[in-house]
Amino acid sequence: MKKSVLAFGALALGVTFSAPVMAADVAACLITKTDTNPFFVKMKEGATAKAKELGVSLKSYAGKVDGDSESQVAAIESCIADGAKGILIAASDTKGIVSSVKKARDAGLLVIALDTPLEPADAADATFATDNLLAGKLIGQWAKETMGDKAKDAKVGFLDLTPSQPTVDVLRDQGFMMGFGIDTKDPNKIGDEDDARIVGHDVTNGNEEGGRKAMENLLQKDPSINVIHTINEPAAVGAYQALKAVGMEKNVLIVSVDGGCPGVKSVKEGVIGATSQQYPLMMAALGVEAIKKFADSGEKPKPTEGKSFYDTGVSLVTDKPVSGVKSIDTKEGTDKCWG
Image (cartoon, rainbow, N blue to C red; front, side, top):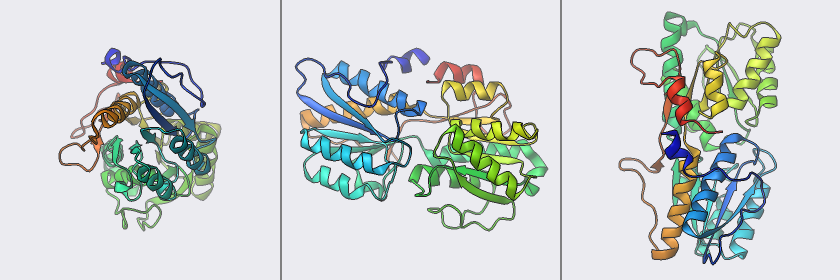
């Protein structure tokens, strides 16, 4: 499986431009949240390799940090001006970017949301993504079953992404609650729950330093916290560092989403209890294929049957399986990982 995923390629990193292939007559753009998060690094590699294979000229852009929507808006403007046929975007501000996306679509570009649905989702022509709600449910169910009877008295903290609550953040958050047995209240909003088990929410910007600071903040609110849901694995590692600094690393169950090779290694080492693995190489490569097909025939991609988006798959990775929750171990997770 790893060979088939890696077949999408592993080319150079960077935020600027991927080298156009010779005689390419189809131009496309990839716009990611950052160029440092391994998930988006691999997304770029998958898009770049597929573009080279298909003869598509690809330009890549990224925000300075997760949450930098202004850079993404500027990138869309550049793509329109350059005459691109399509844009692949992992949006930082899923509501705020919509007017810029509309401008691109009005100009005749195909716009595909990668990983993170826009708000509303049909603001893009299509969405290629992990089922993020399912990803959250899987780690929520696993945490609940792992804790057993102690789950009803758990102290749960949420290390989220950014204050703007992008859809990927909301879906994973709410999915975890559903899996763990917490009433989500408004399923489209983070932070309105009234379950006594919830210690609180904090934001991480999806990186280790943010995870560490957010974990410290939640520990100040309630040092008896014993379950942590993290938006991604870098945030999870930061949370673990904060817990280890106060001798609590063995007292708190950490779950996450991503499935990158460093994250799977963290599961194997016991830093993370379980993670939901997604497949960014495939996601981006399929997006480039869709833009090429649109340029050649005018045909737009269709969603997975029974869903409103094209589902690129998710697997729960843990070495401590529980009854009723399908999972793979870290050996298989390593075969399928990225980064």
